[in-house]
Image 1 (cartoon, rainbow, N blue to C red):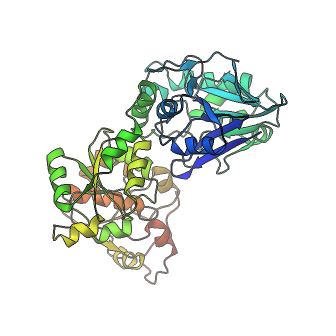
Image 2: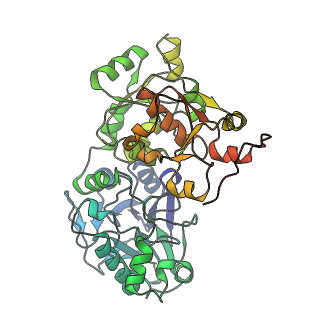
Image 3: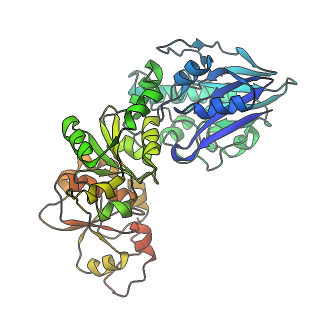
Length: 470
């Protein structure tokens, strides 16, 4: 059976492309749809269906643009109520794609419309299941997202539905089926997904905690709900975009790809109150940047941290990027619903600097310099997640997770110096840029973060890292 997983690592997302006898289908497409169109054209196939497993929270799906450009029909599972033309399938309904069949299996739990698609080959043999966020490799979808859109869909209710879906609709299926999930490790849609992106259902029955047949419903719910962290703030907004519709990506990108001179860039920032988003690496950003700009580097968990740190998805944005990466930045913003990009700085930060315009920088120290300073008992602020901090940290450090920084600004002193760090320097430079934009000057960031602090050979006996284990 010709089914291809198309995996996008930066948002840990898997779309699927199915082709048979001149017809194709795409499952859970990304916002940028041209690669699917090109693939079908190369195969001499027409895209017949766009199947959605559910209304996604962590990205904006490309279903509308793909349907408009190809004439494909959008298909959702039972109970879905999209705000646009789509086919809401019945449970057990079968669709034909060339010589293949796609069977709808309603599996509510992650969301109420969540649906698994059973793939059947040309010989009538069951091949695999495209599970969306119902079943991951090593995990299942979190049941606490829908409540942020529909208040009475509590996580307890959804966890109960998910238990029933897994026990009654998924686990009775044959062991040889290949599980094709919507996400892998790194996604916030689950809590402990495997790095593997496919597996057999039989192996998942043996290894996935959620498929343990010995668990009662109450035990399952307790296991599933324990340890869930708050979802990124942009999730409910992406759900609504996927339900209600959105602007064409072509329009979004046309607006975003306006190359601006330093003069035009400054004028646009002043006129629109746009956020200046600098997507360069933390190392480059620290050396020099446009005052008041926020650093979220493309070479990290860009989309997730944009979603965490920019609360309004309609916020006007101006991009500073390494030359040649401006389109990538705008595209990746649009994947998570940030469609307000109004242009980028032509020539990047160098053009700004060469034009003689005002710049700022962020102080950094090496781990070795940190070791020397540590003898003086400085205030150390660790911006890693609480779970990371609780596992191991510098003795005496204060934990303010990056995604909570705006609620705890009063805890960053202005009357005495302090040192920031995260695991590797990416998150602490985001924090540094936010603090700099809001007037803090009396701090420095540790290059390489906690990982390098641990690996540093320290000669002073007063240095007490490696850390205290909690």
